[in-house]
Amino acid sequence: MKTRFADWWSTSGTVDRGAYALIGILGFALKHNLDRLVARFGFHRPWDLFNYWIPVRDVARITELPRSEATFLGTMVALALPFIWVGVALTMKRLRSAGLPPQLVALFFVPFLNLFFFLVLCLLPARHDDSPRESRKQAFLLRIVPDSAVGSAAIAMLITVPIGVGATVFASRWLMNYGWGLFVALPFTLGLSAALIYGIRQPRSLGGCVWVACLSTLLLGGALLGLALEGLFCLIMAFPIALPLSILGGVCAYAVQKRRWFQREAPAFLSVLLLFVPGVELTEHAASIAPPVYMVRTAIDVQAPPERVWHQVVAFSEIGPPQELLFRAGVAYPIRAEMHGQGAGAERHCVFSTGAFVEPIEVWDEPRLLKFSVTENPAPMEEWTPYKRVKPPHLHGFLVSQGGQFLLTPLPNGGTRLEGTTWYKHGLWPGSYWRLWSDAIIHRIHLRVLNHIRNEVEKDPQLSMNQ
Image (cartoon, rainbow, N blue to C red; front, side, top):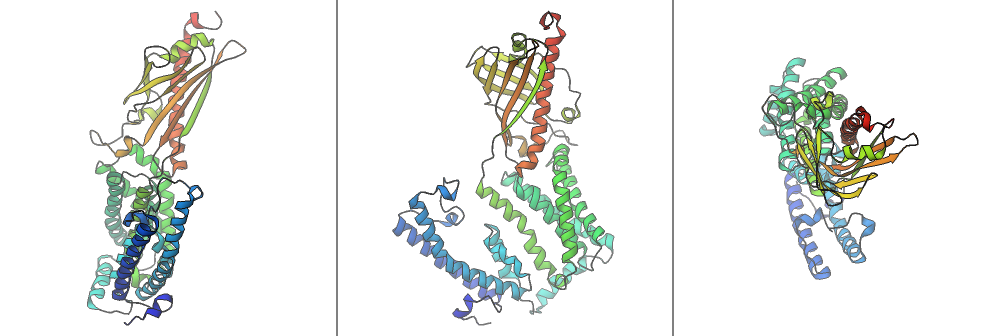
């Protein structure tokens, strides 16, 4: 197929994979060298491949750009516009040639994923290309999927669950990333892919698609547990967000499998779809968004004056074995507090079931306020697992206490309002979902300590407010 220069600017028509690959590679080489020349000689700064994802550094918002940075960025965007238009036009042509939905052109703008997208489009044959290789590819996929519902569901699990394990390992072990790619993109894509394979031979019912989508996510959790990659408690916390997304994927697959183009283009569609998850994971890793600091505050009333409560706050005695299911399930719980020294600059050790928090004292305002920072954090939990021990990366550095305080406020009846506060951050996304769990856990930790302090103060008649 001959391609004229004037055709590059039009979105109508088609382009074959060879011309698309050649124009794409030559266009990128031309653009990169043009960018390097403009950046070096026009703005006296280096320019390499990674600048396409992070053109300027150390700026949180575009509104905070200095004038020189704004001028540079505006120039680079202006240079990119004609290349972007040609890229979009050719990608639309290539999608039409490969028989894929034109909406997939949106992947052209997704960082990192667009590289995989370009590679896939360079490899996919044209829709009208009936070469023996294409026939063998499609025949192979259709041949391994049985007509029966049970058989097609089994093949869907055999294909998608190992891919899900690989995507999980890629995000958590290689990229050290627990975010949108792992907890949102993966369950949705896994459910969608499993249900699509389930319906590749013939359209299936909505209930069947949803059932297969959920089963893929449940089996992925079982595989992660069986391979000692995750513990049961963390999987239980992930399922409330993962299962609804899997269901959504199953519903989408139910709609897609009815399209006439699906059975013909299923291999190409699934190939592009499965690249979505690592693309999101890589984008998150490159963005490296700093997690916000959250605050949890818990208060109780103690029937004793602040002077009596203070001594237990500074270094509370040992707490008995936990009765709460949360702590018995493996979440770290406080045991005792030890004080080394006195006053600001002293060091408090709050001993938990997994180790000790090291807490240098910042404010010692007896008997009103004890405020401290945290310089060492133990693991937040011990996982439930059939193995002796598992060590997923999220147990180290993903839930970090920044500091805390105890505030003692006198009450009119002679008692004390005892308030505990913790400032912390976690590197899990979506942050709003995981904060529901972390806030609840820290609140239960507060209550375990505060209730123990109250019980210790009030059980001694000499410390009671009635004396």
